[in-house]
Amino acid sequence: MDFRHFNAGRDDDGKRLDKIARRLLGTESLSPLYKAIRKGLIKVNGKKSREDSRIKEGDVISVAAVILAQESAQQKKPRAETGFPHLDEVFRNGHLLVINKPYDIPVQPARGGAKSLSEIVEAERLSSEKAGTSLSFRTGPLHRLDRKTTGLLAFSQDAEGARIFSEMMREHRLEKRYIGIVLGSMESAAKWTDRIERGGGTAFATVTVLGAEADGGKESITTAEPIARGTMCGKEATLVSFTIETGRTHQIRAQSAANGFPLLGDEAYGGGKIKSSRDFFLHALEIVFHDEEKKKALGLPAALFAPPAPDLADALKLFGCVIDGGTIRAGAKT
Image (tube, rainbow, N blue to C red; front, side):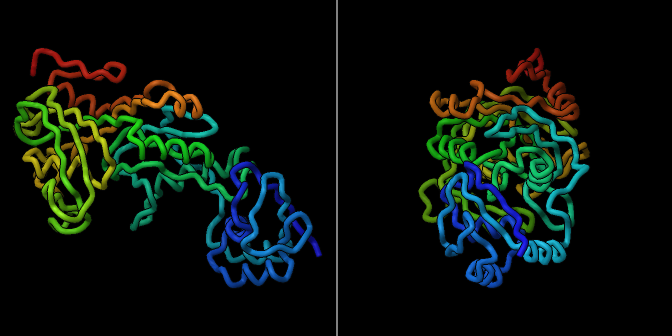
C-alpha cells in the first residue's frame, strides 16, 4: 500500500496524532479518522499508534494514499487559495504578522460570503514555504478588531508567537492605543471601569454595559483623553485617544456610549447616522510592549504604529490634527 509521509515540526511537538491527522486531511469527521488510525492506515514512524499518541518533533506521520485521495475528492474548495488581496504589513517575522487592518473587512469568517482576514492570512501562509514547517499549526488573529475598526491587528505565525503574545495580553504587558471621533464635547480625560456582557441593547448592539459594581459581565477598563474638539458632519465632536487595559467585544464603542460620548456615526450605540466614507471612525493606532524578555523573544520593537488611511487623515485635519510617527499633533483648532 502506498503512503505519503509528513515530517512533524516544532509546532507539532506534543500534539495528539488525531489532531494532526485531522488537520492533514482537512476532515471534520472523527469516526472514519479513528477507524483509519486503528487499521494502521495512519502511522507514526512506520508503526500503528493510538489516536491519542503524542507526536514529537521529527516524527514521521504516514498516511495511506487512498485516504488522501478520498478526502481530496470530498473537499469543496482548495485548502490553499491564491490571488489573495494585498496585506498592509506593519511587522512580520517567523513568530508574528501585524497588519494595518482596512475598513469594512471581517477578521473572522462572516455571513454573506465576504472573505475574512483570517482566511486571507491563512491562504497566504499555505502558499508560502513556511507552510511545510508544521503539520498542525493554523494561523489566527491574536486579538479583536470590529469589522469597521481599522488599524493594528496581530496574527500568529507559529505556536511560540501565539503563546508569548497572548501571555503579554493576559498579563497586561502590552498597551493598545486607539484614536476615535465621538459625538459631543469631551472636556477632560476619564477612566471608565464598567462590566460588559453580551446581548441586550438595540437591535444592532451586541453588548450591554453594566455598572462597575454589577453582577455578571466582564470588567472593562478604558482611559479616554480628549485631544481636540471641533465640528464634523455638522455635529459637535471630539477627537479622543483611547487606551484599553482589557479587550472586550465592542469595548470602546459600548463604554463611550454608556459614559455619554458615543462614537460619531455609530448607530448601534446611539451615535446617529452621518454622511461619510465610514459609519464611524475608530483606529488602532499603536501597541507598546512593556515586557523586555518577551519582546526580545519575539523580536519585537518597543512599539508598533499603524498610520491612518487617507479618509481618516482627512477627518483628523478637521480637528487641526495630524499623525506624526505615532504622535498626534494638534494645531490651533483645539
